[in-house]
Length: 77
Image (cartoon, rainbow, N blue to C red; front, side, top):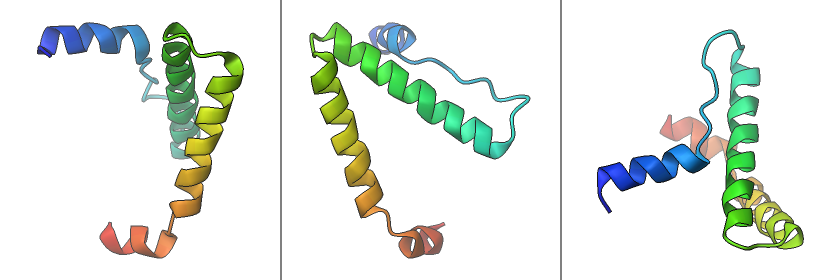
């Protein structure tokens, strides 16, 4: 895929969260919120039902949380 086609696809489905005027917690929560909305928009466009979208996202988020090991994260930083 060329950079141009990547960029136009990103423009359709990736909402940028403003960087100024937010504390770090609000900024990170806003990025997660926008990322989930963008993902749901793409999944809906691809033909998934609302129930399929919900199951997929909850499954992935659950997997991320279950695999999170804070001690390893701190050591690799």
